[in-house]
Image (cartoon, rainbow, N blue to C red; front, side, top):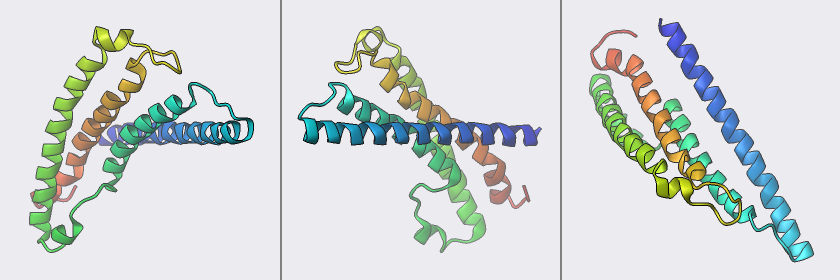
Length: 165
């Protein structure tokens, strides 16, 4: 059963990283074109800056979740490395649990807000899309955080309670 869970997490992570890569590439292309158009021709697309801003939100939300899964977010390593392995594991378990509950609560709130009538009907000025599209980055990132926090228990619980996992 766990090999299917591991495979599922690997697929989600691969898709998230690929999506972020595509978004970063698109953002880079639009940025370069916008700079060239603005400084060479004196004009720019009305949607360029808005597109870049929305892509940065998506990249930040999804990238933060993937970084959390890979253990690359800021952590107090200086303090944690001074603790015994068992205490360190308990601190990490507690931290993961707090992150899980916080992100789950925020996910519910963000989901509800993203699909309110006022957000769904609001149209962006430059891209002419529903504001729900950029707003949806937040529940997407939070959902990934929840999935990864649940997955972390696979290693955190055995480490905290002295069993090999």
